[in-house]
Length: 594
Ligand code: WTA
Image 1 (cartoon, helix red, strand yellow):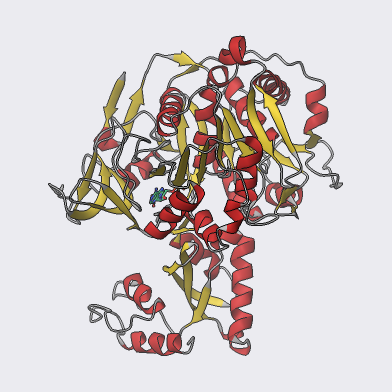
Image 2: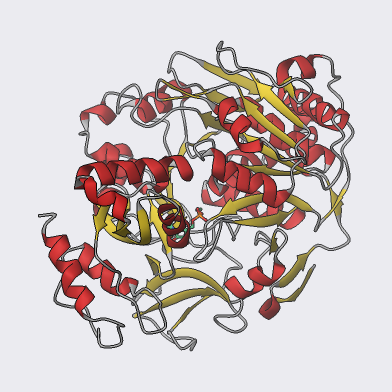
């Protein structure tokens, strides 16, 4: 079943087995569940929602599968999906899975440049998008972004465009096709391509500590098994339950716990197009009331931003259907946990704080509802089969409880990513080299006296802003790419709502000298927003005369992290710096922020 050289990042599960993921998520349920709701789509406007049955979902996925085949997409070919949270997103993923194509969903908040990088990296032949997206009452010009992104990329032969709004968009003759029209001509049957257990299912890009985002590759059988098993157990899923994960499918949470896990379990899963604050801060609880939601899964940032709006927004709505509350994406502070438990769940619903990553494919550390005694702020204990270790900086495995160090995983698990698309060497070096024989998560943690795990956050050069992973290197290279900037270094600072925010130190070019601090900050925030995504835009930008560097030229972020929060006294050893006087100059500039 398992064959692995874990120390080398070589892992296979269920070799020799054949399956089709779309068959398991759709066709397999039809004899009993054809008329059951597979997806509840909750649109941006609360007045609009739709129920899609398993029969319809299979039909749509099959038609879209045929469209892709007509465009020449074959087993193993890559398809980029750049769609908002509309049902077509689910159709597209399942269509790819059905015909054996490898999808790569790109979060519809990413810029043209980010999208372009991903299209090029995976060599996609088809991009699926929409004319526009809708979010929080605003329109997002997705088709225009795609046009920008794919210009001049020869590998992209076709762009399929779903019609989310009535807005007209220019269509590129010979390349662009209206999705709906293409699907109308197709039949609702499409044979499943039988796949080997270890054939690729999807690529999902995520930020690492170095370089550009990397395309983590997940395969078929192990991923599906792990996503569905954890969904069933962690959310205690029973037939008839209404399950709602309000993440975006552009992230791994949406892949595993909106689409693949729940659909494999024959569940009713909700897709939410809007935001927690639209049209008002009662939106989540309004949808819980209207759809009689039993399990609800969101992020600590959303919880904190709602707690701030007051309890009335929660109390107004009937939440008696709720049984389990989940959270994911970043450490949850005990105050936010308690608010979720006491106010939203009225003390009756266990909170499952689930720790996992794009790389792990599914939940790794979590309480089991009704089984594990909870502690606010702790993800508690490993899921069964998961073996963790806490390692000190020298790579020694720390024994016993009441310890803190780096979180590692000791053994392969079925849901783990198998490689980085096109760069297996990087995969090995990122995760398996640092701590010999173990998978290194990049997170720090504490194991308390009871053996409970408390994730303390990233220990590498990744910043987790509002549950979104961003590499410092990515943001720095974006800033340095602006004509106003000579050099940049970014660090994370604590933020009341987002958990962590980005603080950027820049050495300006001469041209920036004529600008006020506000003008420069505005220009650079806008630059990153446009270059990567609004989520990567810095909270603060500070101009400094130079950055603190070691004699070998390495930026000492440790020092900048302290200065960024106004801690000027505990900077540690600064004697190894090329020019220790720089530190005083940076402090002087930071003090001016007030
Ligand atoms: C963080 C999201 C604390 C962690 C599923 C991890 C968490 C990164 C938790 C992965 C949690 C996720 N408690 N931290 N419950 N869940 N994280 O790949 O730093 O987007 O390494 O996957 O988010 O983020 P990713």
